[in-house]
Image 1 (cartoon, rainbow, N blue to C red):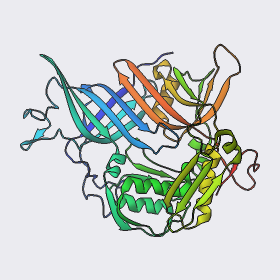
Image 2: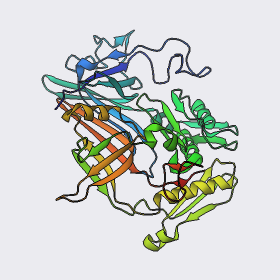
Image 3: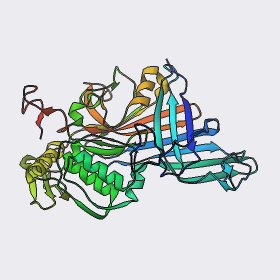
Image 4: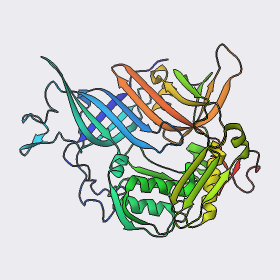
Length: 413
């Protein structure tokens, strides 16, 4: 049975700039956060006409992109016009309608009444549209803190510590406070950063922890998340399918499938700072596809051995072409259960997709990781898109006494 549209709440923090986090218990960092109460959020939902959000990445070997949001607000009363001195957001002789203000979106499930945060970021631009004589809109365009990290350089010498601590040091130097960091499994050497792009430094830290097994991204609350190389195996939402979509399950509106050699890597060469090149190859893959090289340098690891293990993890994941589902499009208003999944699923969640190739035949079933989430809402229409990536070679990993090495799993490190 179809359900109503979710109630969407849009809020903007007009009274503080992007760098002001406030000091709130459990969310701030002593010595970096501003002492005092957090700024007030203003509800602008009554003016919201539509919105689009995009988070994650589009391709498995890509890095996670900055999550973005675009809102269309009714501006016929000129509340969001920075030149309108009568606007409720004009104070002390200046406008509060500025780039650099935080923005967030919530959606309340129309049946269960559970509220989900679906986006938080910083407004980077305001666009305005007019259709004379009576129509006016304002469009705040937002991006999350990955954008700020990409615009920041860091200069400091880090400590020799577990990966999570080093990620935290980079965030401190870039003055990005909101975070959710795993402790990490890999001990890094003390790395000197000299005018290094902060986002690039974090991405190398993630790869040094576990290649494609670990990740750095921003969540829906605009926290920088670091997940270590064991997270896909130890986190319940990643090691066990959370929902099944498709044939005889939650309905899919569209499915995209890929069978390509674009991602194949069969000669992987990685080098740590001060180390020697560590190369892993797959001869069967080379025979099938020719040499497909993947080379990276500057890893933070202490030992060449673990760099070699990371190189092998790339081979495990990318040595062969597989036919796989890369994207599914949902129309969540079709039923309440589908709406729950559309609003609640997060990056790195494991899901199952099944489909019956037309005109019929054996149902294809695959487990995938969500690597991107997009929402589009306008009038009475809501669409959610999950971008997906393969679980091949990535999870679960073998541990003593729990699985059969070489059969059900891959050896971890």
